[in-house]
Image (cartoon, rainbow over all chains, first blue to last red; front, top):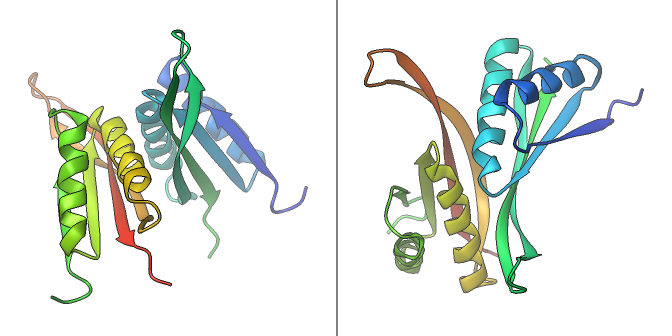
Length: 94
Length: 94
């Protein structure tokens, strides 16, 4: 397993703790994971990151956080921009 | 005006474009501003940052993004953790 291996967790409509559990399981074997979400799920993504950090304290920390926009075609055929967030959580090395 | 002068925009329940306008006005005179929000307003904060960048392209860029938790006492007297986000927007220097 290379040390820059990464894994991605997409946040959707499942219960919050489902994602927290998945993230902690992934972090057991990965040095870094990225939590991704868009639109209203961004709140869940931030909550998941905070809960994971609190439950695993002090083993992990927040890495890069990126925000961006994606252009989606909505049901009425118009383009709609939706914001996205990527939060990386990595093992504390010291 | 010192170059590390900063200004803070708290995101609440007003219409999105109110905050976009405030941010652009602040950025006219400040080299860096910080957009702060908590809970569901975090989605608005991220949307505001993206719209400000798009409208002022390429004059500004995203700086640091921080996420954290605050412990609030809810109406039933229990502590409740709420996530917060701070997004800084700064003038592109090159």
